Length: 388
Ligand code: NAD
Image (cartoon, rainbow, N blue to C red; front, side, top):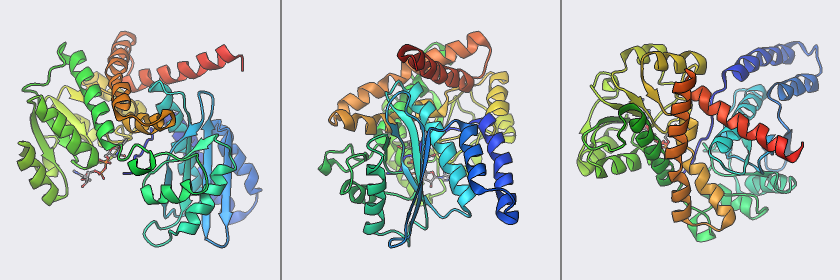
């Protein structure tokens, strides 16, 4: 199951758009050496190391980005995607690896941030030889980067990588791995959602609360199970009609059409499908007190929409914090996988979320900003304590 840890960072995005433009110009005019442009981009995000991997025989074209190893080895999945250009692939891997640093830091893990991208069509361009070759590139980094599944890659690809290096997680249970991380991700989202309920109503019990779950895929369905166990009134939606019917009837919830998400009167909106659903138009329509879900990058524009939610009095549980269960799950593979241990570490998301929501309220800042500040503080405190 791919997990897609990433967070949008507004300031960074502005720089990237600008530099992306420059790179495109460069590709057309060839007026500046490409290395200069690449280094400018790396410097803008303060990335530690970026590795370009090429293998003629297998057609492998990959980029590994290590954003930070301050807290530990840089862990992040390998995404395989048909990028329109090398600039787009570089952009993606730099952005995603930086997001991983923040996600691990706020989750309290001793991990840094990294990510890899393979340029190509995951349906037609994969081969065992390609992933084994990629595994050897990872091995050459001696553990400063650890990979896992992501969009376009699966456990089978990880098994091929594992033939060449031990620096890979997200392996099947039969190989000592943690298997599908989605139930753990769902548990973390549930914990974050309960913390947000506690903050909003001084009561974390969800019995009778009306919750809209948008997207009932691997994480969403598991979240619905937890909510129904607590007797919440759940409305579900998905663009997959067959899935929608099955989940609604099996788990005793009400199916609604995808475009009804913002018109149902609810207490809680749980986005578990796509990013950027919290945009100006939707926030104006929002008819709930709490937003807490699994989807990555829920805020279309982090600065604008985090504040807009705050001004509307809506409690927002930051996505990159509450969907960290999948990362916690793969992290626990290092110490000998134990699902109970992973779940109990994931349970701490309740306390961290509540702490962040209270800090945000006290300091009158959006909760996403409070979470980012907490992550940054952990990084700077660690640097100060090691004298680096
Ligand atoms: P998934 O693909 O299994 O499920 C997503 C579901 O959303 C699908 O059933 C899809 O049909 C539905 N969907 C798509 N567009 C929709 C729309 N417009 N309206 C309603 N439903 C729609 O993905 P997942 O693994 O469950 O992950 C869900 C989200 O959580 C993603 O954003 C993912 O990046 C994020 N996430 C997942 C994990 C994990 O462990 N799987 C970890 C962290 C973050």
